[in-house]
Length: 304
Image (cartoon, rainbow, N blue to C red; front, side):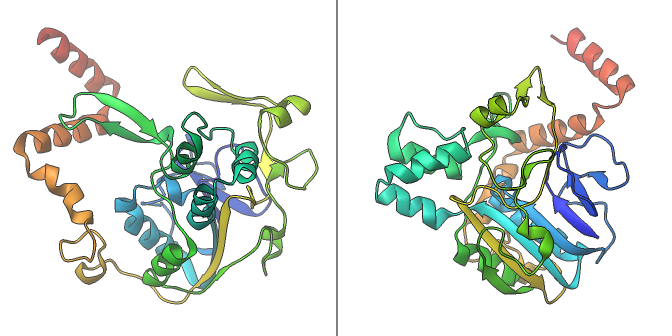
């Protein structure tokens, strides 16, 4: 199986399956699911592709995602991934490279420009979005939704891939691959297969609709192909050389790990905060049950 993880609902490509949390219902090769807990058999994928997905994953959860990706790929299978290139963006920031950031905004119109070079740089690392929800410490105020939460350079991604059973790790060029599929860039299905920045000017020019309103996207086209954003993307290919099992000695979040990750769970030691998070989690999982929702509404009404 060829699997595109986090491809979005409007991506299609012959012979490829898609897994995305925004797909509402699993149908054949379009799978609704969480990249950290995929409903896929062990070693079921020959190739896995991720384009600008991993920067949306909280770094605390990265090990769960990578362990799961390792689980579903066959030994000798391939992974190709794209993330914003931290080194390239950092160099542009330090050098105040106006042309770089001007071109980068054409690739991604969401780039922040009101805080100068620093604001544009930080937007690659942390950005607003719909993938992760942030609440305050008391768990009683929604602060924001986030898209980007972390950023990587090649050295960081190489270490991560090595730690999770991958080898033959190479940084590659745009649409450069031993796999023919990856030689075609991302593009609108009924238009030219060459790469073009998918921005508002492009949509207007080609009579395309891509807008978000009232809680959902209105899109009148599909896309296919793979690599995107050649200016700002770090592109890596690797092969799975061994299985991975998460243990205490390789757990990034363990108290003995050589980082500060474990401190992220310290709030759970606060009894009040811990209880609030426990209730929030349990209630959230049951809200799809109409009877439960009605009972909860009645309970809250009677106690306000």
